[in-house]
Length: 364
Ligand code: M6R
Image 1 (cartoon, rainbow, N blue to C red):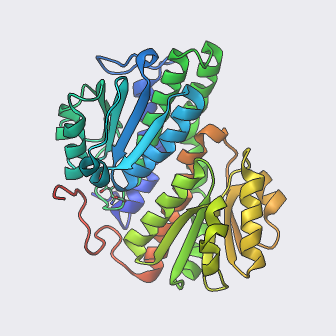
Image 2 (image 1 turned 120 degrees about the vertical axis):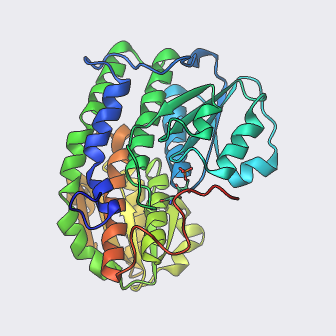
């Protein structure tokens, strides 16, 4: 049931504030002072490193989580796509926690990677949407993301719920490892609690996105740029766009541009820059200006401050609400999803059933 929406994808994008609220209430106590994990929990003081493995959008959620766990919890994190990880047969050091992220919990490569780690890693943790799935059942600890059934092939609400669950886990780890005080934990949990409201505001940019999407739909290639935790978001934006609009899109870390991809830039290649006004903003903006100097057509996704500082001369700007930089990846998923959706609509493709794709990839 699409509840009045034209597509499941549109419904699932719009549902995000509501499902996120449920996930937050599940893991965070009423006064936002503590996190509750399902049994048997996880002792983060004993963890030496984490290996995160997934496919597609779930892989990009892991890449964001790497920034979080390394920066706030001080845990080294390695991230890999399941299809590479499983055949590389990587050595596993003691004290490694293996974490698998999967919406369906049935992705063949992710499940095979989990089975490879079974008996080698200290703990197997999964972050899944389907609690009775194989990946959930074969883990020592399984964290539900509580996104509700996701029908659109392009994953949307599962991604923001995966990120939210991983953010909660990273905060829990940072606190347990003494890198975050009670007060700091509570502040961050409080900020997380505010996410549904902020996502609602972000959904308000839809009309603006429609207007740029009709022009994007004419492009043959589109580049996405981001730095820090916005780099995986750039990947997610590019994946979503490829998947449903069939426009070739690539993501690069902003700083990598001058190592090759800037050669692609001319007035026919829109460049989408995801840059909240955070500590890395100036660096990203200087890369953006290099693009503009070569005639590139820039769409800047930023906040009010970022737009005021760097919006001059860009093709167009999409303004997101201000947010705690730690939580920006969750917020910036929304414009990435809406851009893909409306570009696909402008092209007239089948948004919910893109060609050649299945919702759940249970064969390798
Ligand atoms: O069910 P999973 O999360 O394991 O699926 C992983 C990927 O197949 C999935 O995220 C895919 O990339 C989506 N169609 C992206 O929108």
